[in-house]
Amino acid sequence: MISFNKFYQTIATNRLSPWLNTLPAQLTQWNNEHLHGEFAQWQKAIDLLPSPQKKNDTIDLLNSVTIGEQGDFSEGEIKKLTHLLMKLKPWRKGPFHLHGLHIDTEWRSDFKWDRLLPYISDLKNKYVLDIGCGSGYHLWRMRGAGAKHVVGIDPTQLFLMQFEAVQHFIKDDNVNLLPLGVEQLPELNAFDTVFSMGVLYHRRSPIDFLYQLKSQLVKGGELVLETLIIDGDENTVLVPGERYAKMRNVWFLPSGKAMVAWLERCGFNDVKWVDTSVTAFEEQRKTDWLNNESLEDFLNPDDHSKTIEGYPAPKRAIFIAKK
Image (cartoon, rainbow, N blue to C red; front, side, top):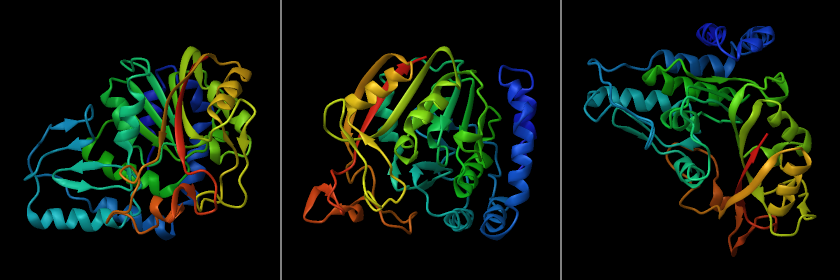
């Protein structure tokens, strides 16, 4: 069983305290429903993770997610660590460097972080929420940028266990991942910055989703939204068929101009479309830490400008907006 008691204690005395009206019951129910099957095996792997014999305070979250150094573990311990963390495959978001072990994840999530960092407000001493945070790579980078409290939510069990594996080595009570969906959040109006990256196109009602994001922000707070877009004017929106790039759960891909219009329609101010990038093979690819297909399998082999289904290939954009 994963304990969230430290998180409850932390928020009991800060601006997130109203969350305690609903959160403990939700997470107790979640724990009761996930104490079997694969989850139990993942938990066992985490329980067996080694710890370095000597105290090592080398943690770099500003430039990467690096904990410890080469030589902190013996060769045998590195083999054990690799074996245990391989049980948590697929590792999609990263990379992570743990005491000399390089977890070469499917996504180079540091590329995305480098793209958005020049445009976001200073995170120092901020309360930050990352919705759909995956295994939490960006949570650590937000903490490295100076955020005071960082909370990620993602309902995927495996991502929580991958986060717990990294947390085993960092041990930072001010960075937390909760196994929740956005629809389970009350209107907290408490976060200075809300990130939502790679989520909007998975939502059946993107406008409702934008309102949910807005309801988590303090007045004047900042939304950092990254999503797939297509080319076109403010009225252009792609509604793909059963699959887009082999993904079943893709509902709406707006143009960049349409995305700006949606944000403004939802009452956001100072909306800016700050970056556009075509997803490249250097950013998303197969590695030893992934059993599944990756970008090269999702594109037309004869024309990489199109998905395997014939839609425009993935193009991602970043939008900044204020409440």
